[in-house]
Amino acid sequence: MTDFQTIQSKLSRKTILYLCVLLIVAMLAAGFAWTYKTVQIITDGKHIVVSTLYSDPKSVLAQEHIVLESPDEYRMSTDKLDNGTVITVYRAMPVTVMYQGKAQSVITAKPTVGEVAASMGLSADNIRLEPGADTAVVPNLQINATVLSEKIVERQQPDLFAVLRKPDASLEKGMEAVEQEGQDGTKTVVIKQHFADGNQVSEEVLSERVNEPSIPKIIRVGTRDTVETSRGAMRFRRSELMEATAYNPWDGSGAGITATGMQARRGIVAVDPRVIPLGSRLFIPGYGMALAADTGGAIVGNRVDLCMDGYGEAISFGRRMVKVYVLE
Image (cartoon, rainbow, N blue to C red; front, side, top):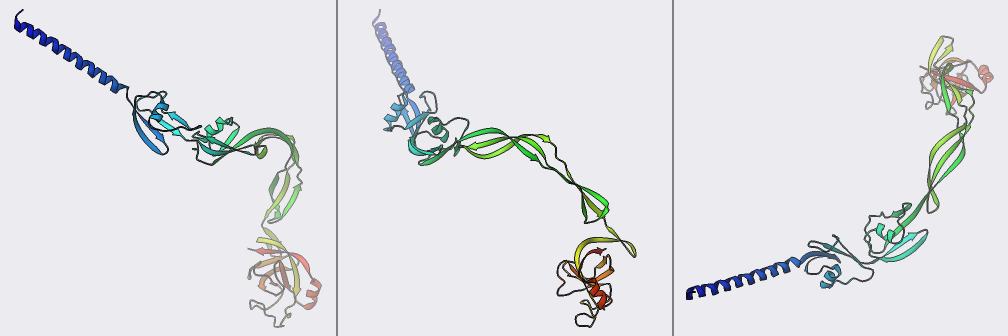
């Protein structure tokens, strides 16, 4: 081998060795970088980004000098610590739980009302939480855990009779007549009662069974709107039973002039204008056709004063109940 070949061989071995060393260093550096993880820590209102070699979350917290006091808790966003994992620290705080009338003060790091209740064995389906299970826990929060229960009962109750109203053209409008009296029956009612901490708060009817049917009350309702007069059948708007007195044309001032300026005479009736408007045509059985054209200080409400031909007739009439038809 020539001197040149010998030198060339030595240089080649050095180059290969140098390249091998570089490769090993690169591999070590890559492996070292690969073992580092970037994680996030949320604690005490702060958001911290951390690079760590640790695989244990407690060690990561200790690395950042974050101390967990009992019963503080932490939770990870992934099953195991990995690149991108978020570690959330929950600090313990005092809350009060009301259960079956008793207040219990607890120190808890559970983040929600539902988890606090579950940690105390209050997670049954028949327990209502206020505030709701998903509510975030804050210091000094009061949690009400109410035990709900139900009970099925049967009651005997009256089956109330219905009221049926039948139009009857034989009766005047405004009149009613009972054709059949009603009578209650009996029924069995199945009821679900709802209780909160042993106190009934509501109930609902599940079913009803009629034992003895009720008998409806039947009322005949008048629809006839005509009244027979000396001038034949006449339509009326309404009719009322009213207290009637009588006066003669010369009562009062003796001038014989009504409140509307008309001459007082038979057929003129004094009314309360709030009940019967002045100018209304009237029919009063036993008296006849009339006109509401006068008023009087004592004629208030359901009262009328009928003008007669003379004093004797007025005295004879006296005071009586009459039916007054207000004609159309």
